[in-house]
Image (cartoon, rainbow over all chains, first blue to last red; front, side, top):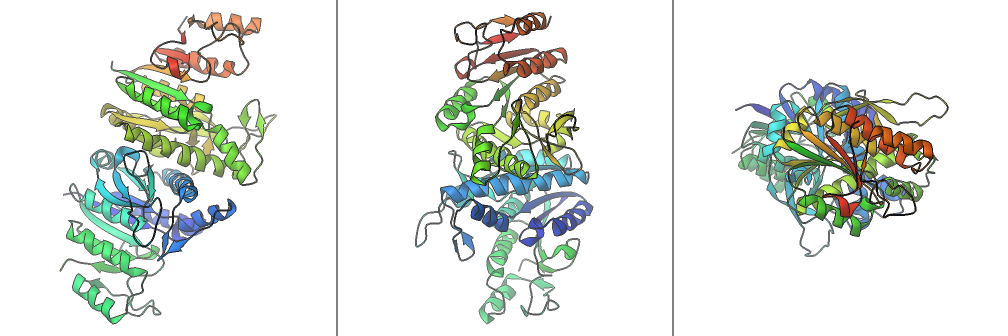
Length: 256
Length: 256
């Protein structure tokens, strides 16, 4: 099987032009087939504020009413995505920017309302990467925005970490996939205050133990849940690292 | 050669949900391979106004400074494009939304400043439809936003009629292309005030004669220039019509 590297970038990395440029340079140098997934929450919050739309978050997740859906569609699908694509093209990478509606590659359902009404937030139900595979094999690099659709005409806001994990699982049918979560920290830390305490390798049992002991930062938990879920569904390897560790480094998550 | 129908829609048609739905229903029913090109100027102007950005037009063309480029990138590349894609997917059409930066399918240069500085407006210099051809042959329907790039990282605003003509020329290498300009009027009118005065067929000499006599509405002239240019460069046929005439009807432009 051919290798494919799927890199998820988010947070400040992708929203400040200096760090974005650094990231794209490093990403361009990665060998072989690759896919980029980006966030853009800070830009969406900033644009919402300019439009007088209040941002409401619950447990780090954005409440997405109709007005906020328009903002994230514009910012994730347009502003952030197309600027990344244009910059990758300038580096000689044949990028293509997509939401889940494009090629119907990622279908979701609007999250059912239980305690909290998240609004137009999508939980992924199906991934179709057949046409994307054709493009990837021609050295095209998909750039995936954190948006899905319900196949009934409704766009939905879906967390970029989830998009990355689901796309990685989808591509695992055709490729040996390494999923790399690239964020501000150099990896999963044994001590959240010590950037030198990177855990080199972590299996699911180890993750659960760290979770029980309270050592893992709350924000890390969904990322690790996504990661181990991806591994259990065929993704070859998951790494969690920062820009500097894109090529190698950080925490490698492994199956049990 | 296989036939391909490339439909350009703009103006109110694409920006009001009722007429957009009607258009997409009719477009879905067109047989064979197809491509959709959309505008979105009214939405861009409305969004700019909400953001306190002034819209300046010269001869119907938008002056695109940095702030306005962000607006059109968001609105054309995100809001309008992705909503059309999601709605086409709901009609069972496997759509994919693209700007010229995606797959580097349409490259442009920033328009040189002569009398007027149009800002980040792109004049098309190269069209690459090789990867798009692969997708189109798999019944994927590209949905093209009026944005290009300079392959140096800069997105550019390019008139949707021009995008349509240039894409039609590009696809003519592989397909027998019919380009359909779909707008508010039923065709090219002999008398601008009489919707029943549609000219059925027009060649370049006839167009020039109407231009000299002043019969043709000023707004029509760039559309017709684009059309005859497209025909001279290999596009099989161009039609100018409204939603009702999408399947057949309107004014057919022919080579000399």
